[in-house]
Length: 340
Ligand SMILES: [Zn+2]
Image (cartoon, rainbow, N blue to C red; front, side, top):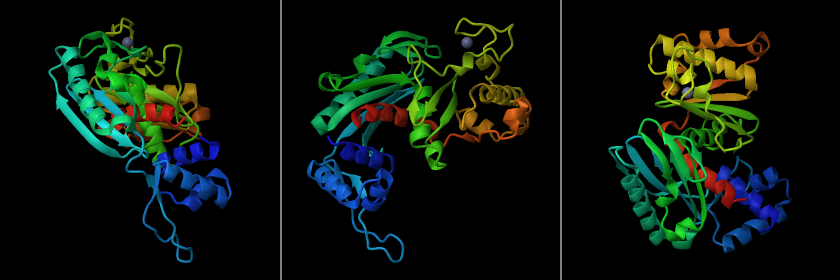
């Protein structure tokens, strides 16, 4: 595919409904090149031009660029401590099908079997339109294995069992749900809503433990084992307290409640991360979403900042996507590869 067409598809994925004229401006191409690229992508059943609408009072009506009804799709799944979800998304992130269910957490095998059955139904319905699959899980992941889900007591779970044959040969990605939530917040959530898609974005996701992600210009930062973001195991807690991870004094052990002490610990640690990483934006998700606005958070955060950071601190905002974050992010991990 030509660079202009690939860029245009990524642009429509990011901002579905933008017009051809806006796309030409954003891509820095002439309107002729944009028109040609749109025509080709429409012919290839990737894009569709919607009903004309007026752009301002004087401008001629223009048509919004939308996902084609026969266009490419990505399947995204999420497993947390009591639910599973499988969603089929189109270009632009819209949901075209979804199934969900609950589980008792006793054994990962029936949960992955339920995801697999839902994925197989989606695969039968949508066929080759499904370009890949992503899965968000509550724990660190390495090479297709969920290493440890402390709340569930699951260890070394082969996540590839979630994908039926045809889908398994496509683009497949598995990741920690906190990392997925961070990516989602950057691409579709708070960072996108506030126009901060570029720069350094730190997301902290407080569920049973505290995880997170570092996103640079809309892409996850990956470490050696693609597990960057385990902020809950920084030693911001009481050194006398042993964490379930095996280390002592982990920050996450101080964040178990919703009380004043937890708010203070969250605020102080968030300031420490800002001191260390100098991010453009911090978002807080999961249980932390409600703690950003709690009494004492703002003051505790300010007190923890270095003077040089306090002069111009980054915004610290609650998650915009809430519980949707992990599944949205699991889809984006795959779209990122599919759209090149
Ligand atoms: Zn720990």
